[in-house]
View 1 (spheres, rainbow, N blue to C red):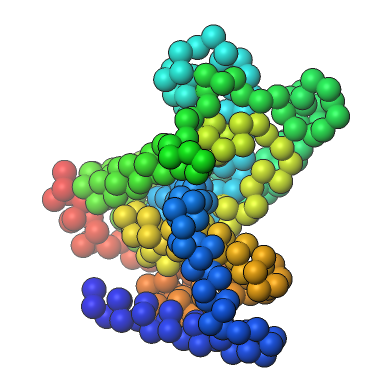
View 2 (view 1 turned 30 degrees about the vertical axis):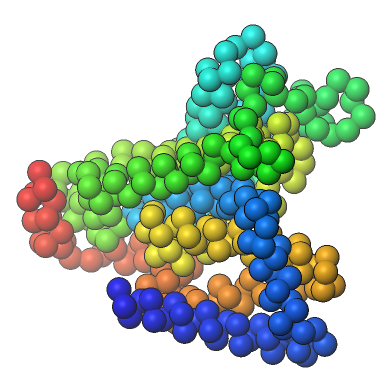
Length: 365
């Protein structure tokens, strides 16, 4: 624990040094940029609540990725699953005007979870039944989801005047109410934190969680012990998709209230870094998501007050991620497994059965 914390602090210090060098080379003052970042991310109550709001979809998608990665299922499709959830919720929302508010919000969230589960479960089924590599299928499904969203807002769901490529607004009864107006803080962050606690309990305190983690270490050993890995694969990917879909539904019901093109700025991809830096730990995902939400929020303030271009902000984020992963052994190994997923799976197929893994599973039962 102390070693991991020390590596993280050292990585942050090195990242800060690299960022300062870049800023000085560009003629900017590192101190002024840092003050602008802090002011934009945490300096006021509205800035803090906006950081939490921007962290919410990252947390949902990070949890989705962690659940899949724990089972050695390389889900790169959280962005598409988030869009699938948003589309399901956005299509249902305008029809809920006569519903009581709690039921309408619940229906929106369930629709989002269902849409994401369908999207993730499809990739899981392809992996389990047709041996289609999930890296390829989830990436391709991202593009499919984005194109379906574009078709919907230009066609079936377009607003009544047909002047803009946006959907009809959801019914007021289906809107997730904001707290502490004029901030955008809403129930979504609390829901995401609750999901993080539930995922932690599932992965580390249930038999199914042990089976999923064991499958991630040795699929063949799990099959030898009688676990239906095909069913577990589909269920894990469906759960992963449901979490990302909840993120999309929360965004629709609480923030945007409608669909539009470019709905996601890349939350699903950024959440891969969120998950890896948190070492796939569901509880550690909360501060990790907040850090990345602060980077996104503070970047806007740096651009406004210091003239830092959005491209440089992305470079800064990339530098932080790469230094953290380079010095963190667990994160580095997780990134390596992600990039070499197909090779790892091929090697697992030829590994000897792990007697220790089988014994642990039998002892749990």
